Picture 1: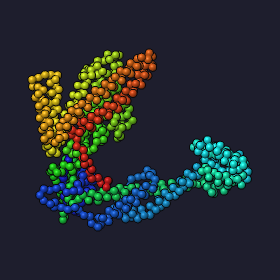
Picture 2: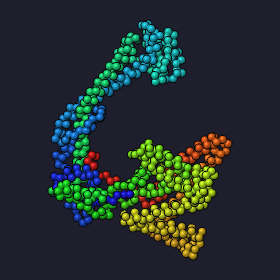
Picture 3: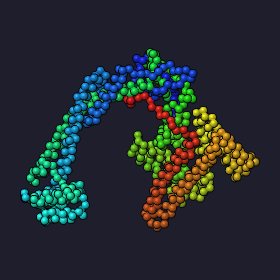
Picture 4: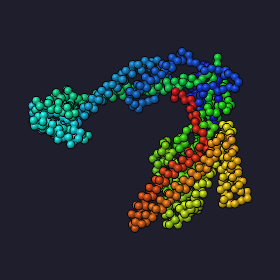
Length: 626
């Protein structure tokens, strides 16, 4: 439901402004309005509060310091540390000087870490390469007259191409060995005479064949020493990184509590300074106007008057018609409806004069879901699934709300399964003697059709009635009149259809048709050329509810087919397998299709009759969020 809001004003001496804003931020129940409420017939007696030079300089100083501390904290590790209890204001200048000293140090640590990390990554890659080449290099022994060239082979089919190229450039005086690295890449090692190596390298470069090389300090070493030297440097880099991490952690354990406490204080202070932009002033006083839940007005008034000894006063103002578009919207629902906010959040926020769609989704969405699925067996399976989901995700996630919604839908599926006499389709009737209370859906197409249309009529009629109320809340009399004409049109149309089945002197076709034409003419004069089409649109909306019949009938027929195919196998285990797979497929469809179509009936057919999007979200002053 939409929480009822009150328009309030708060007045007090200018010297108390930051204290009042601090208290309002602690309470978190007042949304400031940065535009003056219009006063009929006179100019407002206040003007916007202009910050002085000292306040502007303070805000700039705090913003710079906040960004520097954020950067500093982003460069440091986050070991578990105690909470800081420092009072920042008396030492804020000292903290600013410390940040100027600590930030370059942490930046240098970060640069050093990045350099060492890149070097370690390169060394690890070379080490992997050398480990791959070592068995190939051992074949060459200590022959110093040979030159070794490593290449990356992107396609194993190119090995012969490399072999032919090397043979052409070295007159056949070479050896080519291939191996795979730890990550699966194919590499090759070509051994040839030193005088042939340069020519072969040029040929490889011209053929765009990448050569694998080691960094200069290692490539100049003898073959037997390259791997050992590279691994020794790799160990040195790891030790340097470990020492750097220890130094950073010691620094973080000492300074993190202080900087976190100062950052939190800065955030609060900047939030208050930002809120002061929505404050107005007279010669001696500040003036705050805003919105708060109606239930909080009296407690907030008492709190301010008691805390500031009567110097700060809160008054409740009348919400005028021109204020309606400015009233912020906050939704609050009881535990049953709360999970359905997951579905209502897919819609734009409603206006204050409209209705919260969550309530209607909580009432009708599971009802439509149960009417479509309507099977005891499927309902029990869904109930077990819900229990598993709630055990795995007990609180605080969207999947938890989805599981709770599914639980309500499973309960409605059980109820309608009893009414339709369905337990995994016709299995309950054939094996358990289950009998329908209402009707058997697969044998009662017309009753099922009438039932779906009746539900659609009631749902659309409710939407029209809510549309009348919403229009009256906004004082839109013409729109309310058109909604009333729409209600009368639907009632007369139902009477006309009923007269075909239950003749009655008061339900003569001529009278009803004339009444329908009269309502259409009134709609034409009141709402223009499109108004009669809107009347017919409501009829189309009602017909759309036949999807409840169609999708539900499809579900029960698929369940019956699953049972029959399972019985035709001639084997118990094969029959259970076949029927189980088909029932599983039907259950998946039985969850997906009712969800999609029940939501469509709400979003398109029902909510279009009364829901007004474009609400302004209630965002109360919170000192921790500037």
